[in-house]
Amino acid sequence: MNHMRRSDMAKRVKQPDAQVAMMNFIGRENNFIHFQYEKEMLQYQMMKAGDDGAAEESHRMMLQGAKTSKLADDPVTHMKYLFICNATLMTRFAIEGGLNSETAYNTSDLYIYNMNKCVSVDEVLELHYEMVSYFTKCMQNLKKENIISKHVSRCLDYIDRHLNEKILLEQLATHVGLNTSYLSVLFKKETGLSVSDYILRRKLEVAENMLKNSDYNCAEISSFLAFNSQSHFTESFRKKNGVTPKQFRDREYRHHISR
Picture 1 (cartoon, rainbow, N blue to C red):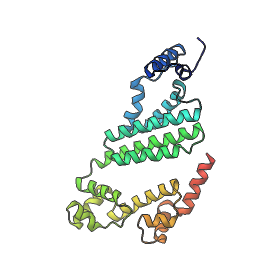
Picture 2 (cartoon, rainbow, N blue to C red):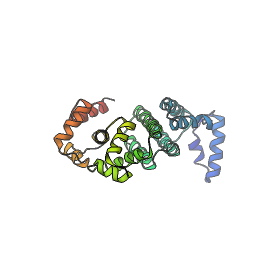
Picture 3 (cartoon, rainbow, N blue to C red):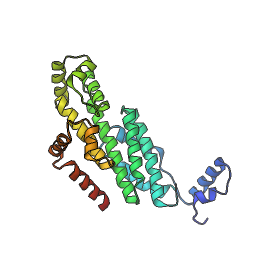
Picture 4 (tube, rainbow, N blue to C red):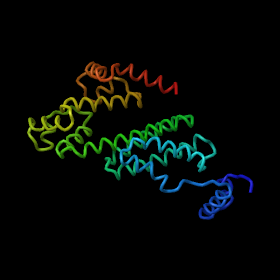
């Protein structure tokens, strides 16, 4: 049989079950074989376990997927479909592993949104590697959090949900039902940071993402994250990253267009 596209042949058959049967037949004729289920699932299990090798394994499977399946005629579109499939499964496995569902879905949404800006297969693959690495890091952090006390864990959750507000130690103490002195000591013992330093670190991490993935200016980001002033935001950012927010955004932009 001449080498042919399964999707093209299947279009001649009207019913979905008949189309799938036709694609199975043509696939066998052309040695067009999908992954074994166990091999395909390995990447997701590795990510779920926080295994540093997950991104490399998933990257390898993406490259194989480019050869062993056909989701679109255009190679970039085909790779984007594979990306979305992987993002969906990564999200589900991460939630099963204990990651907060809102965090998991927002992570998936963000990476799929950025994927739509990719114009080459290499860009899709690079972003996919970054996504799997990020999910893996989240699972690693989750393991660390699991050894944190219930009180501190509730504080971390409260902080993440109120980063656009001023957060005081007194508020956290009231939220978890502890006095401020004990909570302050407990928080630093378990996280290695004071409450105020941890809050600042999380706000700056969000600021970095906003600078990379949005067009909000520095004044808007500073206001959104409830910094005392734009100068306080700029100085805190420079102290952590060695550059100002504007320099950070310019550097990220240059890196993006040079890829």
